[in-house]
Length: 164
Length: 161
Image (cartoon, rainbow over all chains, first blue to last red; front, top):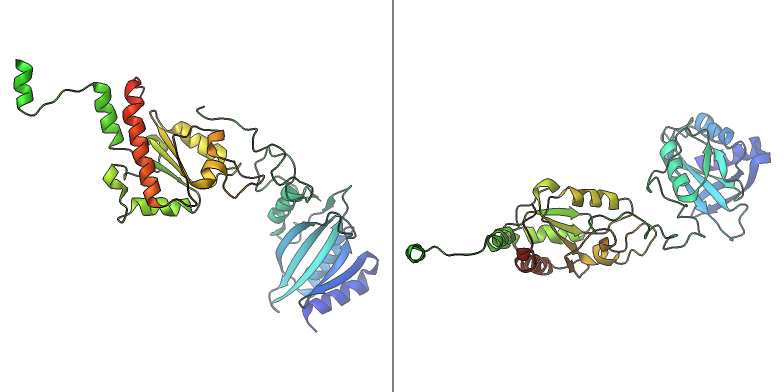
């Protein structure tokens, strides 16, 4: 059994009330979970299964795709000793886009969470420094949301002029 | 009388503004704002094969305070715009600007929320260079066009520097 099978079986047994489902693609499995108590699951991955690296933390907008919720936050964890990946997807509703921060578990989390906040507008409870990381501070809106217009809301036109 | 004898020895007369324009156009100091693939072509233009030094514009300066020709080569994002604007304002007058390539001139293929659709939306541009990216010959042509602008338009303007 690979690490992802171990982790998914263990989490399903221990946190049955928080698991929404699971899936797999090209041999990579993942676990869909509720956002409530996500930190317990992540801590179990880190402490009990040796997932010492948060390889990636990203957001996804599943607007009108019939998913459990509109947004999901994907945690890509790595166990360096076994060199194997584990994937957790936490679903976040549109009307309350908020989830607990993982920055107490991995030092890699704060910047990744800032990017998710920047692009999708999800806020991370207890983050402490939740500012935009890529876009200008004064930017309005969150451009990777699927209902955001491709050419923006006019921010390309409304800016200062130099030497004109 | 006295003037004629000077002329015979190789002197010539001109206007001060013409003399200033002549020296300016043959010794432009470009400020390279290379942010994308156009910058590769700009480097090729500066290096030995195309040799922008033939037109007196080889003294690349990365300090805006020492340069008088801004070459914007590449796409400018919303976040890069204040940087470019600040560098442009730091350049002393007189100064000229070349918008090199499709991205700097009109946004190019990057018709997205993050891209400025042409730098002329927030700063002056004197010569546009078409292409994606333009060949070095095009950039050389733009430099020559800037030289024409210097000799024709600026000669009539008061020396403001």
